[in-house]
Amino acid sequence: MDIVWSWFERPPGKALVRGNVQPNADGDEDSAENGTSLKVQPFSLHNLSASSMPSLSLRLSPSAYEDEGSDSNEDAVSEPSANLGRIQFSMSYDFDTMTLVLHIKRAVELPAKDFSGTSDPFVKICLLPDKKNKMETKVKRRNLNPHWNETFQFEGFPYDKLQHRVLYLQVFDYDRFSRNDPIGEVHLPLCEVDLTESPTFWKDLRPCPNSNDNLGELLVSLCYQPTAQRITIVVMKARHLKAMDITGTSDPYVKIWLVYREKKIEKKKTSCKKRCLNPVFNESFIFDIPMDKMKETSFIISVMDKDTLKKNDVIGKVCLAPRSGPLETKHWKEMISKPRQPVAMWHGLKK
Image 1 (cartoon, rainbow, N blue to C red):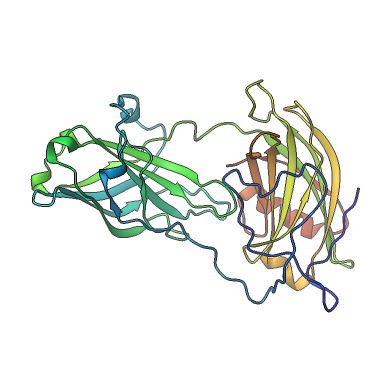
Image 2 (cartoon, one colour):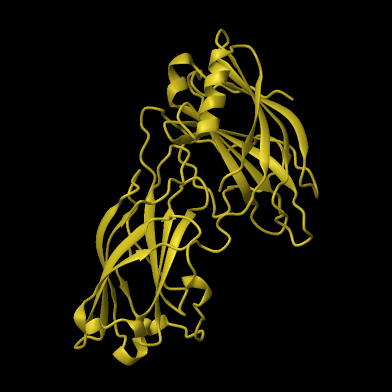
C-alpha cells in the first residue's frame, strides 16, 4: 500500500510532525505494529534546535555504593583484534579528603562508527564492581581524535578500599536516534597504580563484548521521480537477521524515518513478520521531497524486533543519504542518476 504525505508544503492551519522526537533506549518511541500513526505538534523547518547531549556528572559519593563482589578481569585484558584507538588519562589521590581525582585527557585514532565516516565520542566512567554509578564526559562531535580535558572526583574512598577497585572506562559513539554504539573499553586495577605519583596513562581500547555481532542484511529499492518530486522506497526483504528472542528467532518489521537537517520529520512502518529471520515485506512508501531539500535529506531505515511485553529492540539500521557509508552513498547517487527507475541494493545492518 502506498502512503503519501507531504511535509514541505502544508495548507494554513495544519500542523507538521515534530522534529525533536526522542526515542527510548530501544530506538522506538511507540509500540504500534502497523500503520503510520504520528504524534503531532506545531513544527518549523527553519527553527531546528540541536538535540540535547548526555549530561555531565562530576561527583560520585560511595553513600549509594553497592558492593557486588570482585569481578575477574582476565578476559577484559586480552589483546584487541582490531585497532580501536587509544585513550589518555591521569589520576591522583588526595589523602586528606580521601578523594580519587581522574582526569580524562583525550583519545586518538578512534574508528568511524557513523555513516558519515566519523564518530561522536564520549566516555563513561565507573569503579568496578559498582556498575550503577557512572559518570560521563561531554560528547565531541565528528571527531576521531577528541580532547576532553575533564576532571572527575570519587569522594570518600579510603585508600585501602581503592586497592580493591577497578577503573573502568568505556568509549561510546553518541547516537540520539538509537542506542549509543560502543567503541572500546579499558580496565585498570587500582592495586597496580601508585597513586602517590599522580601517573598518566596511554591505554589501547579493547573490544567491548558483543559489539560486533552479525546483524543481517536488508534489500531496499529506491526510485526518484524528479517531475513529481518524490522518492518511492520499497522494503523488499531481509536475510540472516540476528535472533533477538529467547526462542532463537525474531518478529521483525521495518521502520523508516525521513530526516531533514538531522531532524526526524516523518515515520512509516511495514507490517510485522512473526518468528522469521528471513522476512519478505514487499511494501512501498512514498515521500514528497522538493528538489531544493534533497541534499539535506536522508532516510534512516531500522529493522526492529517486535515485543509485546517490553520495548521493541533495534536489530540494525541503514542510513541512505547523499553523504553516508560507501555503499549507501552509491545507492543514493545511482537513484539520482537513473530517474524513474527502481534501483535495488542489499545493505548490511549496522548498530
